[in-house]
Length: 125
Image 1: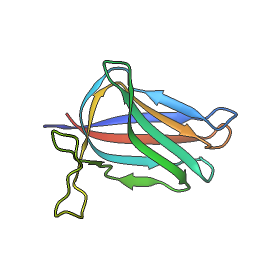
Image 2: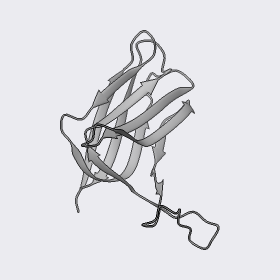
Image 3: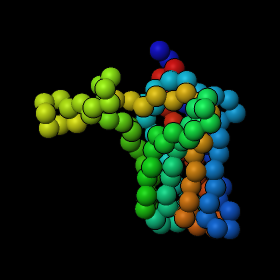
Image 4: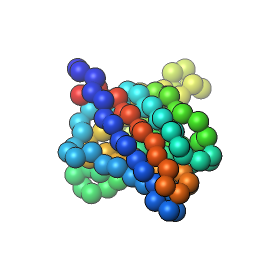
């Protein structure tokens, strides 16, 4: 399973908002996220979503009030076939990489007027 990098170069508008979307769909598991805040102001927000084949936006990452570069391995909680949240030992939550199955959009809000950043997603395909 190769690891692929997806790059989003985002410039914000006068309201401090901006976004970028992959040219085609992505099918894989989200392994890592890096954001180079470049010229963004303090307290910016980042949402990363993908659109499934039903047209629904599925949230992969929702970061609020960031003021520095971000370097994290996002994870999602694991559920069993009945929809019950799984734990490792009854108390610690079980996590795994999130599925991506469609075009991915990275959206910055409250980033400051005409600012820039780069978002890198690393996906096992």
